[in-house]
Image 1: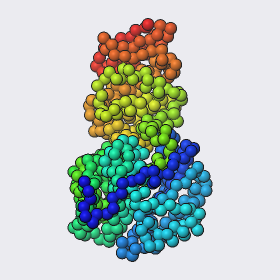
Image 2: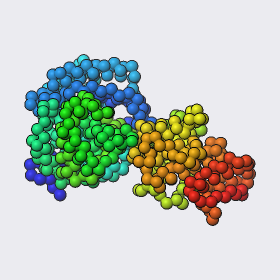
Image 3: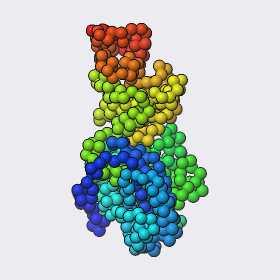
Image 4: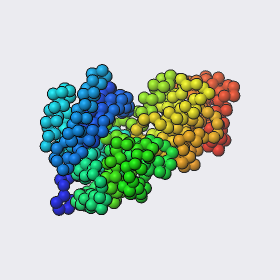
Length: 517
């Protein structure tokens, strides 16, 4: 299909031209300065393989793009606030000494008549060389940021900044065609009082010219204003898990939320828990834009991404080996190794469980079951340093809310429930975090089974990969079959192994047996 007449230019992204070569040395401690149309931000990251950890995050809502639609220039007050923030960021960087510093400026600086002069002023007064991204680059990096958190993301990415909206196609983790539209709140007139009808008409006019190229079932929403809309939905509906990254909701729920926000006063929005008070002046504009996008593109599901341009720049700088890793498994590996004490236990436990687990009908689709088992096994030692009376509860909370990408909210709940059962023989499942709202009964039962299987493997072997290799767990004619090598028969002496095996069999509702060969 082709774009309609008078449409904005839709660019098929040339990734070889846009993306810089990967660094020869692995990323470790890095910083990103992001000069946006609304916010100016410094983030310090620790990168461990494919896992990205935020260790420091500071932003100032300077509003560089405020009023630019009328003047064509950056806001005077915004420039003062942004420059002050960047001077502070320079001081922080001098103390933190990251291995590499990335910088990016987006639509407001790119399009303002005094944008180049502002970049030069920043260089003169702080020594920071700010890279001004084209709309094409901005959209590509936003899409790569979504991929950094969800490797196989497929649909359309919408990155809403203060002055622009970038739409970029994603084909199973690969960015495709992109376009920049003047649909950011400042471009639409914020913070002036909003005329909803005129605003919606303007949004529809821009979107109608490119909608044919960007229809999608799944829309990945990037940007602080849209994240705050998701928080409003969570607060209004009593959603049990207050984590916005990879939160999914239906198009109908998104439309209802957008219409609710568009009708609220500034004071009403400020009273909603979790909503940034400095974003309330732009949220109604963002709400109308979201409603228009959902209808124009035929969206069925919205997935909110806390990752965007900054994380996209980090993914670009990774080597091909790191890029090919799974972000969930890598995040769990890094967290488990930091908190645990048994080196190499996770991969050994995964290999030990896999033959048995493959005999069970999957409760997650598209191969996710294997990924979740791998991730859970890398968390099997996560509570080793915690008080034994509270390990299960503490591990549950940590895993449920860990800042690890690559997992849906249902998968978070699955891993948390699995780790909870890894550390307790209680038949009841921890209710904190609303697990029963996030998991179907079949998935909850399977999570308990995975935890019981990890508990069996860890206790049977004393958390030793070498001893674990002396036993195997397989489905047999009498249900669950544990086989131990004859030279290690002592492993099944006493009551503990039988208790752990029996607990797993009870969850699966099958008989069990132990054999020494």
